[in-house]
Image (tube, rainbow, N blue to C red):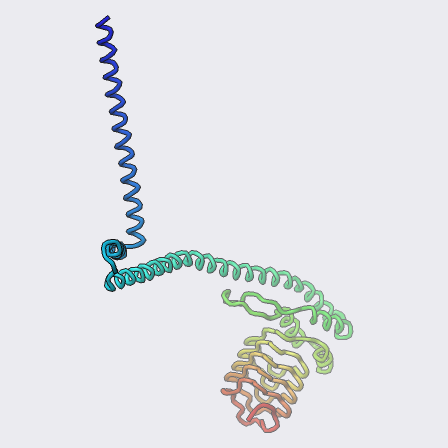
Length: 312
């Protein structure tokens, strides 16, 4: 019996030792956790407050609890540290804000570019749709050849009003222009047809040929009296001996135009670009309106401009 009692005592000692070890481990684990928490809080405080602000606080509280009155230097040091820390935090916030703005600006730039591409694509689709009028032009040309002026005059006037200008890529494939190439094609066909001056005059008086693209076209000697070519592009165009009486070239591009020995009575060149144009030996410019036109480099040699409007 005494042997059994001794064995139980030994067993209890082992269990007590095991419990003591577990309690020691638990206590050490708790202590390490407390130390980590303390270090984390201390690190957070140091990061927020900074060493200078921390020392200033410690100095201020030490004097506050140990002395009757905190010294002015200590208070000033604490206030200075607070201001420095505030500025530093605001600067950090600004830097973070800038970092957040950069992706937003990049996204905005991509969206703008994407919208421009979509807009260009829509313009090209619209241009493709409107260019479907080409087959109507072919039918009209056949009608003119078969029935002449009387059988096609109304069709010409009606179709000309339908052939609206639209945006499309220029021949360089880079820039977008806003003209009606179908109107241009129709006008050039009419000018090369066998229509008389009176027949052309009847068409021009009732048709709209604005926004035509006539760059580098030779229209010398052509009858263009009464025609509406406003907003058209006639850059580098030859208009020598042409009749431009009562025509409308307002807002048109007439850069480098050659116009000599021609007529332009009562023609409108309001706000047109006449840069480097040559109106030499013009027969009649009576009543021609050059109001707000760019005529700084226009050559009017041997032309009577005394009866024009908008020219000094």
